[in-house]
Amino acid sequence: RNKECTFYILNTYEEHTPLTSKRIPAGKGDALLQQLSDESEEGLKTTVHKIVLDNGNTNHMFNTISAKGDLVEVISKTVERNMVDLVVMGNTGTTAAKAIFMGSSAVKTIKAMKLCPLLIVPSEIDFGPVKKIAFVTDYKRSFNLKVISPLLFMASLFSASVRIFRALE
Image (tube, rainbow, N blue to C red; front, side, top):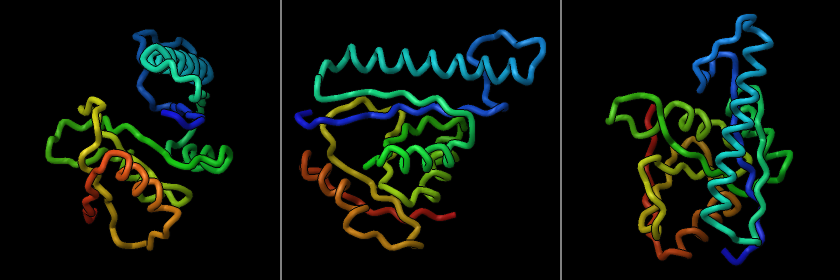
């Protein structure tokens, strides 16, 4: 709250991304990609507007990025280009199976993210003081202090416990 911070709000889309509107372009192809781009940009504007209405913190800046491409690749490029310290990703999941802990996009991102820590936030959670933090790992890579520091810092802010979970394939 008291630190200057820049947030990058990212949305990616590809040809197979579902449209939010019911209009389907006649010529598909370029028209479809343009419509996906327009809807992405509009959604980002709406999201930033909601954030700013809820939080008038002048220490926080918000930049939007709408990009065509694979989610994991675009996140990695964005992290590198903007020297991002922490990726926060919502976990909405499109599957109806309650037994699934995380959606496929979250799992792919976890496996691929090497440049900075990744925080996955479940969609059904309303913000409140953090009490428990899950650190999910497959034990296939080591974690140095640079990767663990944001997690420990966040845990210290809220006196939260950190629980380690092993991700199985």
